[in-house]
Length: 423
Image (tube, rainbow, N blue to C red; front, side):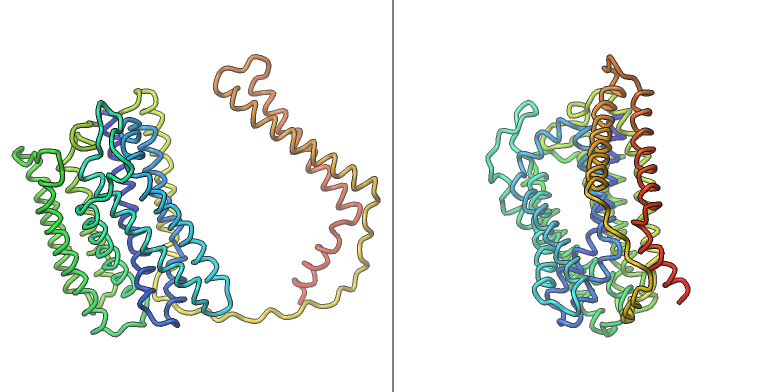
C-alpha cells in the first residue's frame, strides 16, 4: 500500500503545481500582449507567491525519484531535452521577474524575458505531458527510445492545450487581483479561452486512444464512475467560470478554473492506475523497497503541511486587489557625530582570519562526520562528539564577536541604530 501512497503524493504535488503555478505562467504569457505600463503590474502580482508555487514540482520530482525509481529511470531519459528547456525557462523567468521588480520603472527587456520564458516553460511542460501519455519506448523498465521520441503531433497538441489552460487560469487570476480590464473585455477574453480549452480537451481526448498504447479500462464499473464524475466536475466548473467572467464576485472564475484544472489529473489517474508509465510499467514494478517507501511517505508527508501553510500565508497576506505601492524617498543620513573606530592592528586582523578559518574547518568537519555518525558507520566518533564540535564552534564565534564589540568595531553600527530610533 505504501507504493500507492507515494504515487498519490506524486499526483497531488503535480496537481497542486498545475493549479498554482499555472495561473502565474498564464499571467506571464498574457504580459506579452499587455500594454507596457501593465507588464510591471503583472510581474508584481506574480512575485507574491511564484516561488512557493514552483516548490510543488520539486516535491513531485523527489517523491518520483525516491518512491518510484523505476518510473523515474524511464521518464527522465525520455524527456531530457524538453525538461532541460523547462528548467532553463524557469531560471530565466525568475531572473526577468526579479530584475524587473528591482529596476526603477518599466524595463522592456526584463518584462519580455519574463513573458517569453513563461511561454517556453509552458510549451516544454506540454511536450513532456504528451511524451508521457504516448508512452516512452521501454523494455523491462529500461528506456530504449531515441532523443527526440518526445516530439510528436500529439505532444505538440498537448503543448497547445496546456498553453490555453494556463492562459485561462491567468485571465481568471487577473480578474480577481486587478482593476485594469473592463468587465466586458475580461468576459470576452475569458470566455474565448474557455471555448478554446474545451475544444483542445475534446480533441486530445478523442485522439488519446490512438496515441496512448495503454488499453482503456473504462469497462470496469468503479473506474468508469470515477472518471465520469471527474468529467462532470470539470464541465460544471467550466459552466461556473463561463458565468463568472466579468461578474462579481471576482474570485469565482479563478476558483472554478482551478477546480476544472484539478479534474484533469484526477481523470488521467483514474484511467491509468496502477500503470505509471504506459503501456505497462505499474506502481508495484516501479516502487522502491518498503523501508524507503516508509521514510519517504513520512518525510514528505511532514513537509507538505509547511508548503501548504506557506501558500495560504502568502495568499492571505496579499489578498485583495493589487495597488501600486508609493515608494517614499529615503532621507539622507545625518553626518556621524561619533569618532570613527580605529582599524585593527595587523596582528588583530591575522588573529581574526585564523579564527574564522578554524571555525569554518570545524563546521566542515562536523558536517562531514555527522553523515557517517547518523548513517551508523562511524567508528571513532559518536553523536556526542559532533555536538561538542558544533558547540565549540558556536562558543568561539560568540566569544570572538564579544571581544570585537569591546574593542569598538561595532560602535558605528550601534550609534547609527540609536540615531534612527531617536529621530
